[in-house]
Amino acid sequence: MPTPSTRRSVSARVLQRWGNSLALRIPVSVARAAKLAEGQTVFVDAEGRGFRVSVSPGATSLRERLARFDPKRHGGELLAAPPVGAERP
Image 1: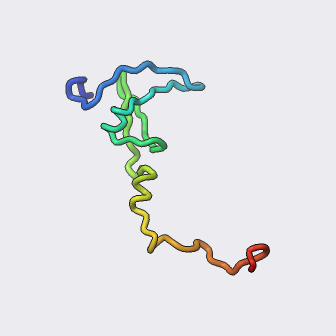
Image 2: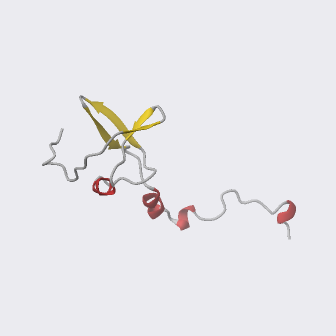
Image 3: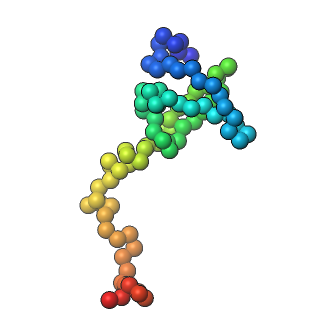
């Protein structure tokens, strides 16, 4: 486990109850250093008297997914069909 002197961002936090679980708020400086984003999937594993938070291998943020979006490839109607009902002119 890295020591405080080898970590890029160190911050002391207090665990708080959230339902039947404990919650830890991650400061924005630590989240940025770890390249974490809101809504991103992470894994939490117990390690001795501590724990490790790691990013899901395939997890990407919405911003990353939108950056890869190609309108030429993915654009247009998903299920193009003739107008029906009130859609008709």
